[in-house]
Length: 240
Image 1 (tube, helix red, strand yellow):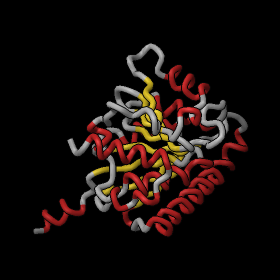
Image 2 (cartoon, rainbow, N blue to C red; image 1 turned 90 degrees about the vertical axis):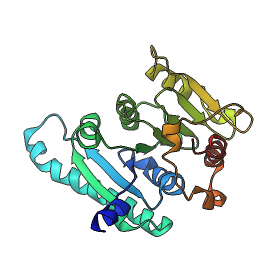
Image 3 (cartoon, rainbow, N blue to C red; image 1 turned 90 degrees about the horizontal axis):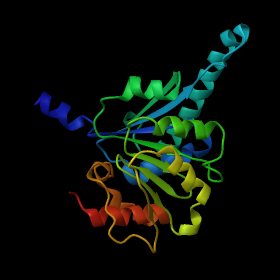
């Protein structure tokens, strides 16, 4: 009987929610709560930080400040997931880790089954140069899939393709498309588009489909347009 209880309580999937791009972290949290979370899901909130590369005196003093800031950000994000979406505190883990993002996620999260990664982008310029772009580049250089990048559109990175989901095609900047195409240049990794007018014949990969919440149908009234399109694709593809 004890063994059965452990099996029931064990999470069947894990959501790794990256908070490094803080401007989009709450959007990522909303997406994870609305679309992916159910009672057998573990959410890990991750915020990485790195010390500056010069100045020994500063190196000794700045690390505790960076860690404190990272922990504070995660406390805020966890609080919102609990208050706004009713996710139990026990289902949410917080990890603030010093180190380079790729090294951290490969060290701590490689080998976890049924894991998806969620990252919130800047709503204005997700492709612009800067810290968040470095985070995106680092994340997409790994083999962690699927990845959901959330802004005013949804960018779904599967093992074999990238899918841009938006209400209208004009919502997707050509600069952003080129940015994603450049990341996967030289690889057979097509860029596909799903909008209200362009969705015929499209189905999600089974590995992606398995990440969605079993209760997602009860939340559709709260979805924005890209989320609703994604929900329609889930229903169309079916449970596999």
